[in-house]
Amino acid sequence: MTDLLYSEEEEALRAAVRDLLTDHCAPADVISRTESDAPHDRALWKLLADGMGLAGLLVPEERGGQGASAREAAVVLEELGRAVAPVPYLTSAVVATEALLACDDAELLAQLASGRTIGALAVGLHTAPGAGVTAVRAQDGTLHGELTGIADAAVADVLLVPADDGGLYAVAADAATITPQVSLDLTRPLASVRLEGAPGRRVGAAEPAVLRALRAAAGLLASEQLGVADWALTQTVRYLKERRQFNRPVGGFQALKHRLAQLWLEVVHLRAAARAAADALATGEDVEVRAAVAQAYAATAAVRVTEEALQLHGGIGMTWEHPVHLYLKRAKADSIAYGTAGAHREALAALVDLQAPVQPSVRAPLQAP
Image 1 (cartoon, rainbow, N blue to C red):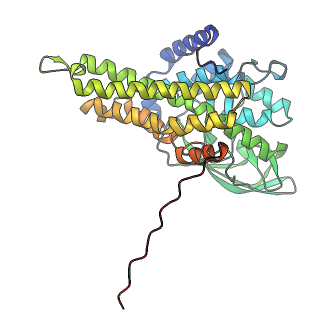
Image 2: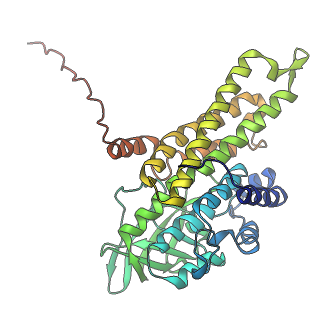
Image 3: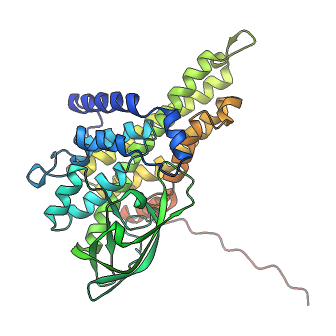
């Protein structure tokens, strides 16, 4: 039976992470970082990974980690989403870590679990579980090729690169040419990775490792999207209670109450989908179905809530100084990360043996003689 409720330990973890982010990840600081050449907050990452041990949550204790489950990682991602924290937790502590858990490289896995080494799976952020993956050419122990759309590659110490011989290779980031790409979400920058004879060490088979990593990413990304949407709704309700017009709070107007009620339902449904996906990843039951359901719903729900939040904030919501634009951009970027909602609906239809509706044929117009 799926348990969607948070345990006492999970709530305690949430409180600890939220307190740390409140003290060290103010919205104004995040906005300032997006305007700089160093969008990643390495000091915050050190506090989360080294100070709290969160980088190794998904790694078993005997392999140097905390031995927690995806449920705890989901709680962390919720709070990071609420703060749009510019740290590589999803890409290193979840995606790269899950890829290594499918391989047999205890040393590198322990390094990622410590947080002192940051990893990135060199697969485009848009790639859905089970989709085709671009591979580089392996030749005499060196790798050749270019990969694009790699999230957090700029801050990574090691890249996990799939090659055309079926292997997954660990490549030192300084052996690759990493070029920043234009990204809508400046708190999770993208980059292209070019390998020109870069030495690589095979750590395992690429296909099962990448599939496991992307499936976990899709399922746990919903928790980050939940955090983004929950922040947007909470701040919007607070603003509408304070903003006054015609000598009364704007939030008292019936039309706005109805819009807020609809947004609350969106967030509640999103929470259920995200928790179900996290529980499935923790227990190993119905992972494919629940991850697909979570992303099919979360991708559109988070965007809808943040769009409404920006509009309901009025003129101040359109300013660069207000952080709501960070949340809208994160929601929009997340909506295509690890597969679009449409891609996950197609995958879900196949998983439950549901045929897509037949499109009506369109007759060609008559041609004049």
